[in-house]
Amino acid sequence: MIEQFENELRREGKSPLTIEAYRTDISQFQEWLSGTLGYESEKITETDVREFRQYLNLQKKLKPTSINRKLKSVVLYQRYLFKLGICKEEVQLQKVLLKHTIHLDHEVKVIEKQELYRFKRTIEAENNKRDIAIYYLLFGTGIRCSELVAIELDDFYLTERNGKNNYSHVLIRNGKGSKSRKVNLNAQTVSAIKDYLDVRPTSESNRLLLGQRGPLTRLAINKILDKYSKIAQLEEKVNPHAARHTFCSTLIKSGVDPKTVCLLSGHSSVDVVYRFYVSSNAEDKQRAVDGMQI
Image (cartoon, rainbow, N blue to C red; front, top):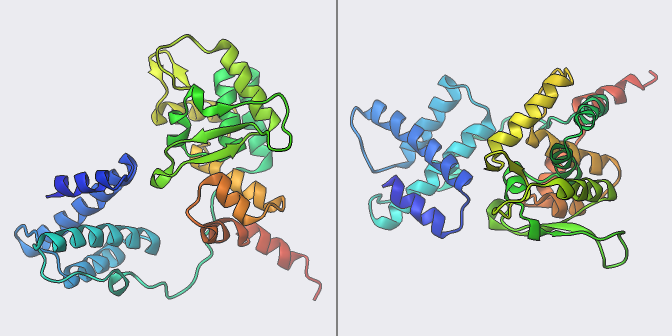
């Protein structure tokens, strides 16, 4: 039945990563349900979902955001079963979500300025034009790793200089939620891309980033970042998600309005930008009280 549900998600245009996340959450629920009941059952009730919520909260001790993500997956699957007539009553998501009793600021992991300098210096010292382009595309555009490896040569529009209605950009054709968007490129990123294109190997593939065995994968990108993090002797490894958070956070702190950040980064709404990047982090709050004279 899960396979049929996955086919339905594909028809709706869900990405492979999203579908895999649904499968993982639903499989965990089914494993818990069969273990609790002592037998397998295709039917899902509101009581089942509530008990699963308690299990995730009290036994697995997951964060509320993780619990609610899993519950949303299960409820979506239950709605599919309801439409097929397997379940007699549709579960209402708002009735089963875990309520946040205390609002906690959601702080994202960004790479500090000194750490970023060491990381960037290490990459440039190696002088691998492809890896330098990867650095500028990640930190200069905030694109997701899946979007980075999907970029093709035809997706770029590069100009000698940016001017009115004539800006260098990259077209992200299939972002999260199957949405497309144009992401503007600054002069440093354009220069890095051009330098790489000058030495890019000839290939039948139209993908921008190539390795010895063909187009780079998400795993390959992470291995490249891991390598430079180790050489730079960073305390924590740099990853594409941290680069994305750093990009968005840097823009917000530079005074760029949240709507523009939302459009560039491809976030689902301005509310997400406010939630993740506009609110003060722990360091900002500590600096504020340290500066008080009382």
